[in-house]
Length: 467
Image 1: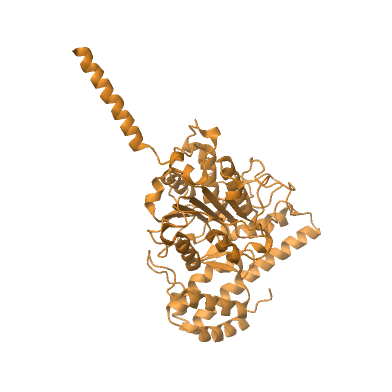
Image 2: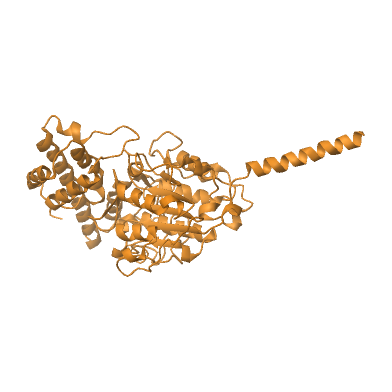
């Protein structure tokens, strides 16, 4: 009798463990009934933006090792870095100071001027008829059981993401509208995860992304702050090899990718990665040389395993890497995204031989960029003064709406104001995108586009652009 009781107790314990194990199991590979898709885009060009294409190439390698097929991975990158004359390792791109080549094997689906907002949205929506240029024609032809991962690395500003062409932007409302259209009652995908690296990236989803279209998004920063480049040149731990005068990666981006490189993603949830990335990107919640990583949309999705979206490297099936090992370079050579170009030209100037053409060119570019910044800052400040008066101008232009509210009510007004301002004053460029909030506030104040045009004409006559 005692033996039978022991046996029954043992059987109950085993059944409990089986049930508990099933209950606690992360939704993982066996839950992936459909296809995994990935869209990876670097929205910048020029060597001083090396890090964005390095990030995207690294992301591709993670997808590939995770088992995604090239036919289901769509890559947008200008492709002017690997073989750039400034690249000290021709044909090679690295994303870590001691890392290997991440460029090898990366598909060149959309390059050069084919990297634009129209083609990105067309590819995401699976609409080949809307594509332009000479890209591969690859689009996300997903169905209701499929899972989509989108990763975007670039410069941004309140409500906008950059593209390689100075006057080409992806506006937040257009992106969210495309996501809603893709969902269309669940026909376009089962779930979609969006990782976004850009300054003020929280503003892309803040007050805009619905919680009922099965989209989960995380961003490198909140709606009001810069994101950070990392592995940047200088006399600091984690700086790139001496021959590099540019940042190799972005802080939020390398945080999620290095975490993915080190772990069994079948056993790691999106929420677990979010927490780790948030800790690293915030410099352990001190925000000293760091930003606020945010999450938006359907937060229920973050309980799912990463493997559902980006696969998992079989080499990591028994991984037990500690979190601390991933944080060793959390503050290695970081710089505001918008200042990475200045850092590049400063180091290029310092390292060039006295009297050389290289040194002269680096100095010219540095002075030119500083002058351009002063011009756009002065023009926007004067625009506010002309529209609202010298005392109220700064208050109106710098106002920040409450959390949970979108940047602007009338997005068409914002687009018109930006077009009028740039027609009078020249392109905002990657630095000037930070003024999108000021231009949005002009619309929020009810100022007409014609009044903006007249004021911009005056403001930019005082601060003329020659670029």
